[in-house]
Image 1: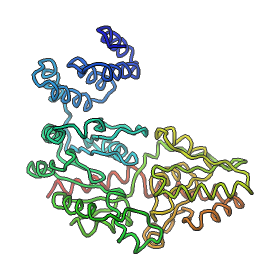
Image 2 (image 1 turned 180 degrees about the vertical axis):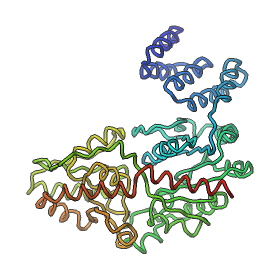
Image 3 (image 1 turned 30 degrees about the vertical axis):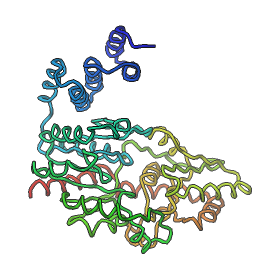
Length: 426
């Protein structure tokens, strides 16, 4: 069915009744079935603003003018939106890939301290973390002129922010040609690395016999060398990641990943289910050791009575509902350090199995309550816990205390704000 003129009335009605999902669905149909027009971009921008996302409204107007630079309606609306950007002592833009909800969480922590913090996300993911600027580039990455377009976006965003905090070796321009533009404008730049963007097999194998990362190191080393020529400061979540980047960046800070503890409730006097529910959530099955875990589960089911759930293809909020019901959660068996799944699980007061290398056991705080297991020991560790299930609640209690001490959004966002302030004072 072709979109008709009536679509505008339907969109108007949906937005007037605050039926945001309905309005978005209608606009999605418009985008798929008909060439986008200035009216389409106007409604997209208006919907974002009505939903409380002013930056994304600005971005929709910018995108509209990229398609039709001479449209007077869009030019007027864009000028109005451009003049209404908030001001603050520090204005931060994060981008352009959301990793484990960390951009979103850091934004909330920074905003609570008076920082104007926004995030730009190019990814399109089922996890639905949310961002201030949402610009999925899956359909545009191979289009002619995309690099020039994103450099123009860089120039449009430049005057709005003082500091640019990038993640996972990304930037605004896909070819990293925005870095010189940012430096020439006197902007501070931070890079936060998270894992496969920096893990080098030759380095990892020295401290972790189970390390499982790419052995094609040349592209990673070349990219690290290029980034470190422009970036003043690097942040990583732990000492496992620090070992990969310390020889490239002049300044490296370790700030653990963070969660908003107000969004993770703990069951009082929690006791395991009659049939234990064991959960595993592999975003990357190879790195997580999923195949070995599934084999161990199948072998143990021949002798023990328990439930197992694999969490995949769900939004972040849906996954959290399952973590909250679990009795035992398995994180990852190869990397040698723990990830956000372990942090979230501990925040819910749930015991977690994860491979922590001997090197990282020495680096982490002594009170880390994770249950250690690797591909060789996962089945025996699970069997022992099935036999000694009464120990699980106490491990969960210690996990929650550990997250409160080391992964609290409020505490850790303050640490990152201190880094920003030092960079701004240079």
